[in-house]
Image (cartoon, rainbow, N blue to C red; front, top):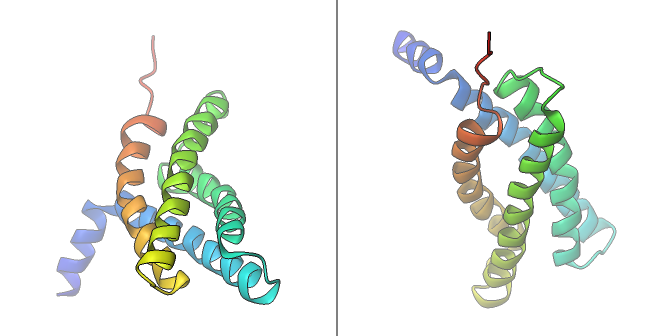
Length: 140
């Protein structure tokens, strides 16, 4: 069983790194969301946006340099713009879905964020791998 698990990790190591990096950014998001909402008493939709922005910084750095092992600096401004665009769309989806989950479905805001984050993460992995952090072919 351990060998099977090790083989699975080796085969899909980039996906596992994405999950770990995303989990780290998610933890930062949840801690910021909870702190801003329950401790500082910021309205939950405002704290959702602020927490998302904090987690964005953590996420970009981990995904670029660790998950996708892209240490280039020459394309970083393009990647950052694309990543920001993708995350901007995610932010709009996140805030809209948070509103629906909390106001209409009466789901606790932390659980709502967890559900939404999983859905957005799946979509983001494929966009990151295919478009944003896609390895560039060196020209002769």
